[in-house]
Image 1: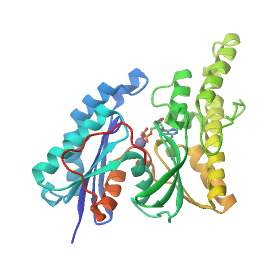
Image 2 (image 1 turned 90 degrees about the horizontal axis):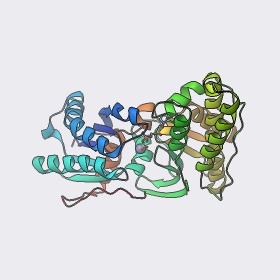
Image 3 (image 1 turned 135 degrees about the horizontal axis):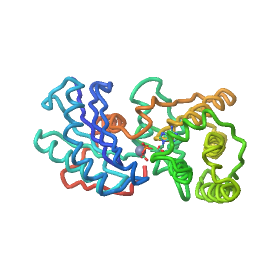
Image 4 (image 1 turned 90 degrees about the vertical axis):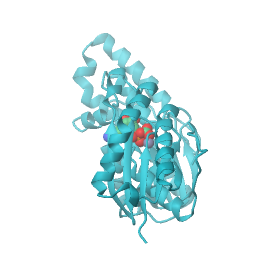
Length: 333
Ligand code: KG4
Ligand code: ZN
């Protein structure tokens, strides 16, 4: 019997819908919200309003591209949290309404669990147990993944997320939001000749706020003697910052692999689109005999395909939710 799931993701500033059928993603459509660029970050109320505008066209497009009818749907999976509450409410309410009108079950999905399970959208798929470094604009975690729905966070940031470190540095450099992809591009033509300190944080936890402060003081000092310092050195600054963020992430990932003895290593979340991080994971993997798993770009940043895949594994376990469900801003994996 065929199984078809529609998935909705609206946790931050991307409105996304995907259709999953019999183990395959048939469509994965995302509307990005450029409107936040001029504010230098995501403005929650603006994000909610944009979700409300985008959600119907995005779902239509996902269904059209998948070449199915809504009557083919067996379930609706949706992001319940964590995320911006006003953004989540749009997706949760939409899922409720559609599930009610089609009289099909709903499946609530944890956004962070879904970033990890994005690895099961297509081959090659990691084998259990594996470690997943989940790095996004809101989270930085090392997750020990024992099974599809059995995960444990063994390390996390104590302050900023890795994506925030990229975005806040970008702000200091006068770059548009989100700055991660821009720094990535600039860094390609730069050399890491500026040195920023690596924080000394216990165990498998991370910290990025000190890095931001040291970059701020460094820029202030240099700008005093040369007002054009940023413009003249933007490639090298970008490369130096990126290399430091990547080395902080890699050192903890290596430590986690050593401590657990696990050599199945995956990365997920928006920052896993970073070319420096992808290269470092591949190189370290070759050195240390890891099997590494790096998703395609469209499965790194926020997307509904990962919600659909997670929804599928919950469907198999009949983990359905009812119409009383509410969105949650905080929710650990
Ligand atoms: O997972 P995601 O799309 O949304 C959240 O759940 O946060 O991650 C967005 C974050 C932003 O901070 C963005 O700057 C960062 O991912 N990002 C990157 C790159 N592409 C996106 N950071 C560094 N290099 C990139 N290529
Ligand atoms: Zn995310």
